[in-house]
Image (cartoon, rainbow, N blue to C red; front, side, top):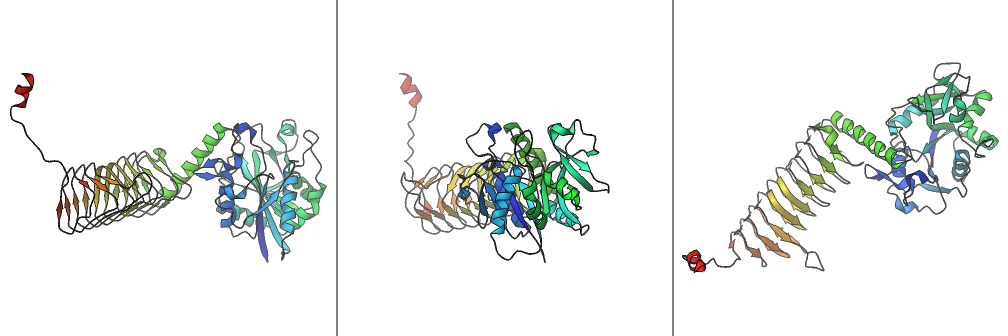
Length: 444
């Protein structure tokens, strides 16, 4: 039986970011770098996921830490030492298979996909003597990256040459650099302890295992993936480029799945944004965590959506949907409307300058411009329940807790503090008084 485990290296300092936040917790698409890699590792049904961290790293900071094993690297002695720490945790598990493989992934290369990881596994089974597969990216001429030394057969390699040695090397170097490895576990167990420290840094590098495997008669191969997918980040400038890559990949993904983006470069997604086919998204829209959009929805320009569910509705322009907003089919949410922790039922309209919070809005109800549900009394949040086919006049304030019955009408400018029965008309405003010829009298 063939299986695979994953060791993720996440114990680096990230000092070039000049941030108090650990590098692996910086976010791309709203998700920590390390969480991205764990998520991909879990999605390929790996047997174990081991994360190698510094001793003081708290796994509770991660969204996808459930079931992940933490291995500690007390002192940073290089990537091979980090893999040894992870391997110790892996070897402590029971029921190991003979034909087992181990992925070695880097927490600061977060966009690697499950599809790429599975393709690496296919390459590993090209022939029975294959023992290492290097995940490779076109280095685009970068001089600060190591290069792969080509093997005798196409698709094979002999070693990974460090950047400092690549300039003067006489070997046949490919314009590819290392972004991760897939290693036969039996080889890893046998040879990782034989890796010698670098004469420059005195650290142990896992990349040396390629040369060791080749010299011992094993075949080492590589799998080249999209450079955007394998982009990493050591500075805040590179982190911004990583975000651009993530957004470009998400835009391509949703458009391939049938979503129409009018101006793709202006739309920003979260790592977990779910969009069904036949959704239209207008320019300058930002989606944050926890958004699902059903087929037939149209999201207008300049909307901000977080933690919301959108049915076949019209939202925007200039709408803000906050966590807990549930916008059902046939709803219209217009400009400068904010919805928070509320259900807006089928066919309802909330078109202008309105705040709906901690509320239920019934079917085919019309909420007039400037309406506010006053859900907070300074201490507690309260509910507003608005029935079906209700008409709420403009500039009304509904002071929660309050219920408006079906088919009720609220007069414009009202402050409603008591429940309104079905079919009733409620008005709560001062009586208008007109003073004739007031202007002339005021002048005198």
